[in-house]
Image 1 (cartoon, rainbow, N blue to C red):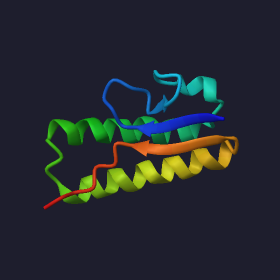
Image 2: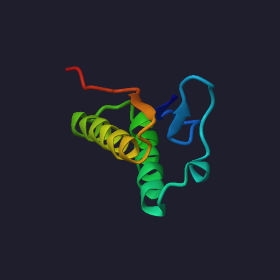
Image 3: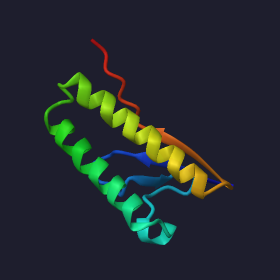
Length: 93
């Protein structure tokens, strides 16, 4: 079984191989262009939030929700793959 992580880290592609290590080239996954665009847009928002030190609770919540939705969407496409998200930010006041 393949194990992938939807991952917002700045140096990544948005999807990481949790067992084999390294980031997965989104083109190799055979994703629809709109899904690739969602992932890259999420990464861009994540990067902006990172440089703002995750100071906006609504943006942190939105990033978590988008990451979970991306995970669900990929899980529907890859039924023989375990998918999780990393990191889950969860705003703490």
